[in-house]
Image (cartoon, rainbow, N blue to C red; front, side, top):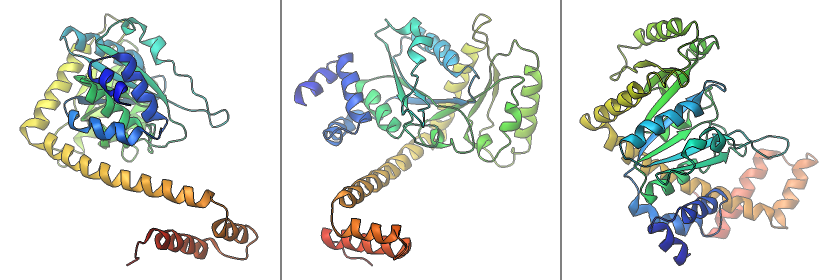
Length: 321
């Protein structure tokens, strides 16, 4: 692992790819790797891009990266694709869509399958973003599977979240669902050269008017097109930078980062606990015997779960309150 870390810290992209693979696959050395990289994190600005399938998220990210690279800033991209519930595979196609950046040493693209995770993000997305942060990327862009009522994880990961909408797809109605309006720091009405884009903008602005008394930052609505000379892309990045300045000036950026660090610690505790429970359950013995009794309805699941927790805590020397 020492050689891998040394190559990683020297800027070797192969070492970056290898480190991400170890983190994504929950390798035994993952925790030690992240522990060694932690002090190097906290410098990247994390931008989340979400929206319904077909909204043009990947193309929009591709054009945003072009503009960011003109500023001579580096970019790490985490593109999350849905995993098939039948085969367990995923079509990780974002490297094809963003092929123009394949040979750019200032851009690193990683596609990830959700592997059954809800919330629009793969389970280890935050950790992969952290690895890119430690590598020294100025920006980390996370593109989620698609927007929906369950896909709110991105707002707890990204510093700025862009929700991508398109004309004629019913997206403006989708945004009215609980939680969707709240996750957007910026709305991008993509494919604005299509009929109906002005109506989408008007509908989103109208819905934002109902929230004006409750929000400090009013999410701007930016019209973009990745086909017609990358229309609105400069404006979109400019709006992201304005939001970043707003967060810094109001002290929100520091406050959010500190809160996320606390929550991350609790998430790790929860993950470690689940892993410990799973390991104990896989062992032959009284747990499996009890599960068999549940299966034939001799014991109810609630009593069984209480017993299993008690056994694990007692075996670990932990006292229950």
